[in-house]
Amino acid sequence: MHKFSTLLITVILSFSLSSAIAQLPDSASWAATVQNEFRVIPDITYLRANGVELKIDVYQSRNSEGPAPTFIYYHGGGWVGGSKESNVLRLLPYLEGGWAAVNVQYRLGNVSLAPAAVEDSLCALRWVARNADQYGFDTERLVVSGNSAGGHLALTSGMIPSEAGLDRQCLGSETPKVAAIVNWYGITDVNDLLHGVNEKSYAVRWLGSQPDMAEIAERVSPISYVRSDLPPVITIHGDADPIVPYNHAVQLHRSLDRAEVTNELVTVPNGGHGGFPANEMLRIYGSIFSFLNKNLPN
Image: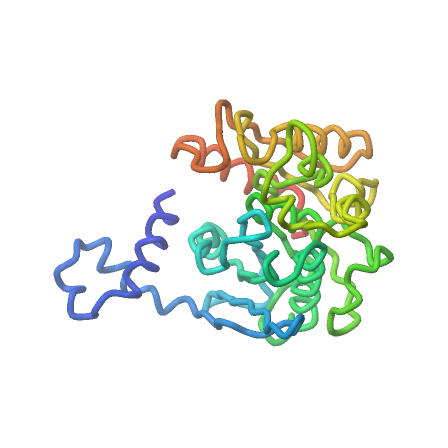
């Protein structure tokens, strides 16, 4: 946790005036000097769709030797809000560990309804594979992650096979294989959120009034793609989440167990939709990195 805090200070200090460094405490002054150990390549266009240039940001250690494990992140916001920029701090634990990180923008519902966000997430994954040599991504250790709707997109990116036809607009022909999925309270059954007791306005907005919305919802639901050859999945979910029902995590966990897919469900007692207390976050990250250490290739 000390190193994580140090890197957080580093990012914050990168926006400070250099003249202020001498007035900082020793630890913060040291952190300010190591910010040059990392580089950011912002707003790389990975796809043009609906007249929109979709961007990703690449974060890397300048001292990496050889291809680095790569963390690909999709932001939350119910597919209708949010931004990649608002989620930069979620990359820090991986950057501190020497990983590369890719932060993804995708089409929101006001630009294009479902399944556009899923298509974009698959195209971003293919971009990573296609540009692995240039940016030093280790294609054997690609980990997709996200929170809420971003958790859903991480799951679909790692679970949807090419025969589903949702990657047809992607550039290139690479077929990247995800090594693991880190799912933070992601939606697993989209149809469940369109009607009945679990109806959510964000899901209704994302599907709109498309006549085949039930079919689309099934096509973009991770629960539809459970099978034995999936990558390992770790899910984090609060059992009192008012935004994405906890049962989505439970159903996915049970389905993956039945399919004999390596997976773990980390339940946060009385946890809501993120915003977990510090002691729980320490436990969660301990579980995540233990899971990844066990299941990623060496």
